[in-house]
Image 1 (cartoon, rainbow, N blue to C red):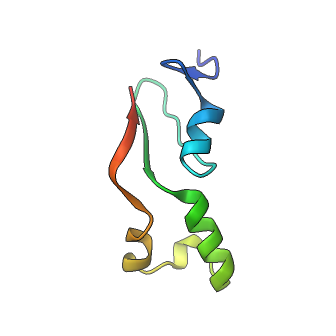
Image 2: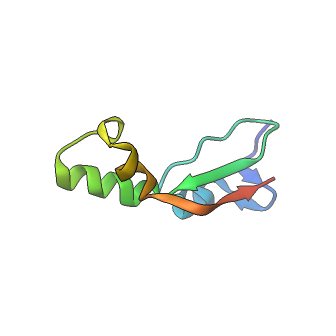
Length: 70
């Protein structure tokens, strides 16, 4: 069972690095591929939902190299 630790990194710490959101799947590495906090602020400023971002807008928030915690 997951005990709020993933190789020494708590989900809270991982979420902080990811902008507040992580998608943990047991048995798979934790991958943070975008700055979701910045994306959320951008969407709020524009008055849109994240699903309404264009591909170019979405790509602005992707990390060049995803953060991977195995």
